[in-house]
Length: 445
Ligand code: GLU
Image (tube, rainbow, N blue to C red; front, top):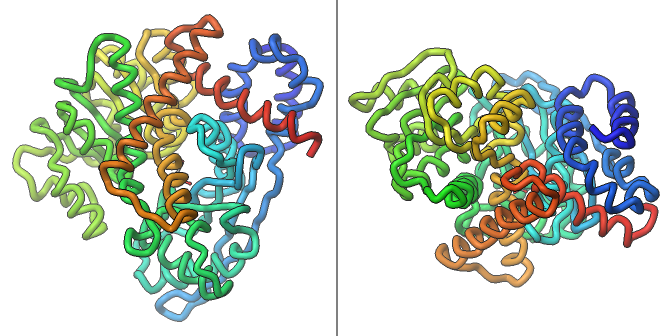
């Protein structure tokens, strides 16, 4: 890492002890930014990096609620409003027991660059709670969401901060959160949350957007090597919203997705995942992949283990952070891997990224490859602002244009900085320069 940046990084790490994921996200970005600071000494003078690493505002709050047996439960809620240089804070809420400040900050930090890359007017933020929705009834989830919003409402708004979903937060949770916001504020403020239901201000394609976008981005990378998804053997990790829609899109483009996973194990389905059955099991029944395997011939279920043990020409990690390490990356490379598109946020460890890059594998980092979700959230905000709703075809066309645009911007930036094909560098520099220019123009705030 560039010596000037090294000392800034040391200060950031020391100021934020115990936040391993945030440290990882910061180091990964800093490693790309040396050449930018050679060209733009004004960024150093204005302490852009120091400011960028310090969230504009961090909110941590108590979330009390009552479970179905009448017992009081207490969770912790977070919203980190990281950077508003380009627009209102924008980013999802994650409900998962692993959530703590370091996770929210890594996600919020990544979100700044991701949102900048979309070309849409949105800043970066992220939030969530250590609440575990798994095994909770609808009524419990509703009471939790209502309590969470009873504090959060005072911090958000269509011009201030616009949350959406992430792991553990889908259409059901957004519905309960929106209802409580509306009740407390007595405002039908559609643009305060995205990922809403289609009949009450949501956008078509938003549910599909992250998974579809990841595949569109990866397809653009494959094209640079004269190939495409057609005929590829794809392995996807996860089986939530992002994974399911990535599987659907990859198979529409002619690939066979032979495996996907959940936190208990993975399925191998040599004929290609049956997306309708997967949706039924995961989205309707809120069941497990084991149930999918039991209902379909020719499928094997592996309890525990790693889905990255399955051979692939294209890997789409769509589960969670640090799910793919250096060992798994090396194994995938040996099995003939061509490309990786990150549907999740920071799913590959730094070792894994190094293995992919050394092997010449096309590697699309999450902040570029999975930006289709938040980009379509921005399209939802546009529709809300104009009280309009667009067709599926039109919205998907916009998403495709945006993803191709992100790919081309990353590729052109990597070329410009003398590292053709390095999408990590392209995404980090492309996102950073846009935010840094805006911060510089807006003065010391
Ligand atoms: N949570 C998603 C992400 O990681 C989407 C955020 C949004 O739609 O605001 O980008």
